[in-house]
Length: 206
Image 1 (cartoon, helix red, strand yellow):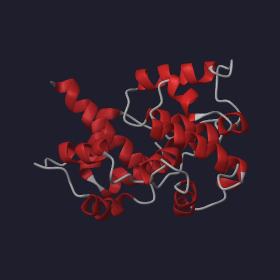
Image 2: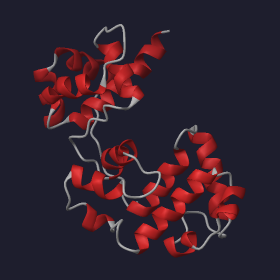
Image 3: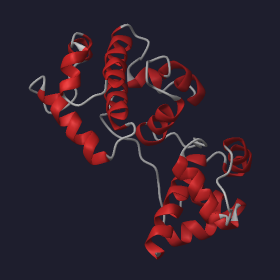
């Protein structure tokens, strides 16, 4: 058992039950995924199902005759109207072009340089791009960089998982969840994963 699981079980009996029911989990970084590519994919997935987003991404890649993300210089030069033919909204098309532009001017740095920064510094840096909010960067920190201590308190699934696991009648306010989650530090990313699993486990019991 990892130190993260030992810590969560030690400080929180409800989390200990979740770990026992859901099984062990160890976050691992996504290899070979750059910051630019991760943000493009994240914007594509905003407010869509995974299936719909992947369909649009496939059309988007096909615009360039590719099977994955085009280089930022190509995307930056692509008119919004052409991006919209792939299925992107006007707002998402503008966001994608801004991500490409900020990658080219260095505002969005390569992954190796970004990885040297703190979580909050990364959030501040990446949210300079249009359409990239805190939640999007938190998902990047958790799943691309495998940062261990991220708690996305605005995430509906995390809040709903807390409500289910702790027997609450309503969703916690983000500030309340943030205070409660201090006990999980420095492994709040793992705790968030188990709160998502609490929702899945509740569905399976129906």
